[in-house]
Length: 473
Image (cartoon, rainbow, N blue to C red):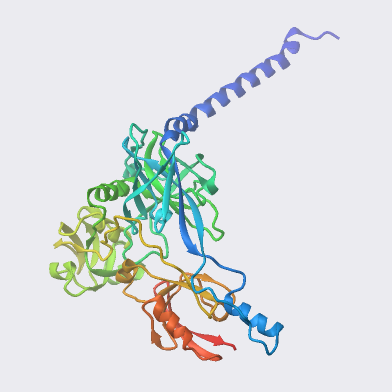
């Protein structure tokens, strides 16, 4: 039986065709993928690692009172000869974050929460040089901090337009997750205009949401677009474990540039105030007021003597546009208001009685407008017999939230945990006595009965509630 030449060549031709097709597909795939390597090489020198340290009160496994009681039990009828140390023992606590150089003369951006309260701040450059840093200004509402190191001729980033970002675009983050310096991670923009749950009434931030792997230590690092421009500053994650789970939030670069400009100018950021309490326009409200679809910010209440009141804005108005910015969701309104300084005149477009009307308003001054030029004083956490540690809340938090009290900073075993208290709760009263400071709390705690139930009133996520603490001798 004879085999034709064509039959012999067919398997070879098929093999060659498959090889050429695979090579062409690989080249096409590679051409469509972003060139992250070049982007990292170009911008790595601008990234810094930030280390901080602070003095905190040391915790021991057993406190002096427990030790005294233990000695009494071991030696019945004999008073223990124990000299109690009245001065708290201090230890140093360190933290690591990220940041980046924005000018050749040593200005650095990072997150406020990375450096606030630190006794010492050091900036580690990509070339292994280390500098002590000075705080130029802090801005808690945006979670941004501006630092300065004493050096020159430094590489620095280029800012891009965060408003031009589109959902689905590739982005790259460089930082120091878990202290692993200068690590890169890529992902896409998942959403824009996000408002993170749990922030204050004066929510002046509209985040970029990405699926980039942001972990502890990434805070303050830059988010780059494919042109190598900074379009965001990595700020926080939404996670039940504290680690990256594909949902991270970045501060838009346009917001950051506005904040940095003001911090450079006078060490503080001033934001405008409209003076309304608002909520979302849902389907029911849209139907009640004759709107074609739900949109805008529903004015629940106009604050007395506020800029909104003076301009003629009323309860049950629906704000659909602020100074040229469309208000799709109610969280858009405080974000856009916060981009303007007090005294700015702005046009507010309102839906009222099935008509669109315009009111001219002169913005007031937000309660968040505070000065922060130097390193803040450290707030010492205090222990108490109720099984948790507390600290004073900041003046800004008092002003913004309108409440006085002390914040629970650490929870141990004891009546507090058994009652359901959580870290972050603000204690405003104990045993029906108001609390405005840690000193108040300590004095009231010492006067509590040895046993029985006592009420404790807290504020959690803006809601007040009273719980019962069971004291045991």
